[in-house]
Length: 492
Image (cartoon, rainbow, N blue to C red; front, side, top):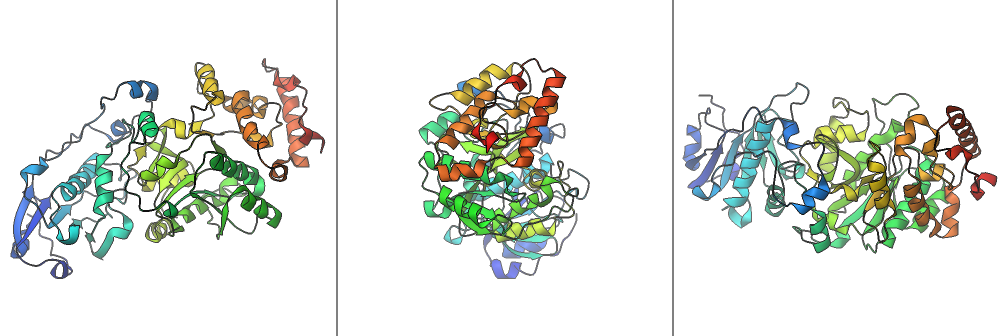
């Protein structure tokens, strides 16, 4: 038996005659805890060592088929028979920690112990004033995806003391354990059937960030206009710095954004002069603490249908990208200075798989909740079989997609006559004239004074001229390079 001396703060939070749940503490000498009350050992079957993290987050899921068949499929993580245990005042948990080997956070047993503790707290809560106390023993910080950073009350060595928000914790444990099942289905979106624990719409906002260059100003203007067309009443907040000129800032305000000025955060691993040099500025979203919930949307996205329901989901909810990785183009977050400070403390030692904010955030929030891909629908074609079906979705009227994510070259840097991704060999997987027209419909509905911020620079016109010439030399059979360009921006 291993003996860890109790933390000194136990005297402050515990009296006598308490019911003390012990989770994963079988190899610990807990005799000194008996002075505070009755020890209840929680027994559960350890998850199979054959179950790997990727089994919880399968990459390819047919969501249309999933909508038709609501049966839950995928991996199961054993849980104890919670109702066979007495009510508890405090839960003491020993957490596995395999730090520092790469991927140490993606440990299924580690997740299991967290979920046992969380479910126990929700189902067996007897704490005073509805509060449940949890004390963790671990060299690693408990998963902030489940026990939020700001719920940490005290820390002493390897001991961590939390008082979680029970409503938020209950919502967390009600969601699927991985991405094999949607956190909400399209059918549930339509029915507005979801776990709503929001306090006030005034404490919720959509947000985007301009961190790289003024090139995305047009995208941000169009995004704001598309959101307002859906009838949302939430605030629209845009983070930027003074590298964006005053006329462009005025246009962003007119488009619907409330501007928040920030100091950009440099990505220390970004290569010199790369576009992602300041993409860690996205971390500033967690400093929007005058909001309880923020739905972040990249500036190369347009929203076609109201997605306010996303505010009812917890951090971090997003669409899948590949395997156990979520896409950070649309994500639900919960601002917290504590979380932001934790990002900054680890900004140099966390290795992003793609060198950007998406890779960084996926190393923080390894356990996330899958939203339907139609709320962040990628404009790309992985194979020729997708072309017809995707293009039908891009042009459906009324819209079937909630948002389109314009990957590759953006619509506003192309001529409006066709998608210029057709002209670049390695970018042709992102080419869709149908999706291109959908973006331009939003643009054309905007005030003309906003449209002028979607112009083409002289340099960009030169680049388009040469990419068309190269497409002709390559002999692309679709012959987009033959199209007579009538876009008035070519001549101004």
